[in-house]
Amino acid sequence: MGFVKDFKEFAMRGNVLDMAVGVIIGGAFGKIISSMVDDVIMPVVSKLTGGIDFTNLYLPLSENVEMGLSLEKAREMGSVLAYGQFLQNTVDFLIVAFCIFLMIKGIAKLNRKKEEPAPEAPAAPEPSAEEKLLTEIRDLLKNK
Image 1: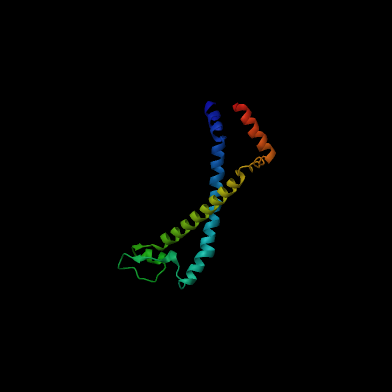
Image 2: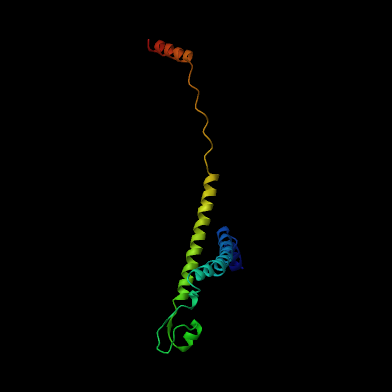
């Protein structure tokens, strides 16, 4: 019974639950970013580069492989250096990293607004000429 109790205490700790929520939201966020890259950004890049499909870019490492084939067919014919998928994954990573950077920066900005110090109380008003004169008289009498 001690094992079940220990596990329950571990699983119910706040930081474990926060981490679980973070992993779930991170997975969903990753899907959104992947869709943005695959469905929005890469078609525009492909259009600008003349219709190149990055995921099918490769260099043949075998004499049996011809250029211009799909990556799948080229792999069937022999060894290839498939660098296109690496480029795609690098673009995905950079976009995800940039989005996370913007999100963290926005959260930090919101937290700074919450922590702004309360406005300082206005400074005491300058003493009048009469108060200054009375202060000088008092000081002179003290020094006698």
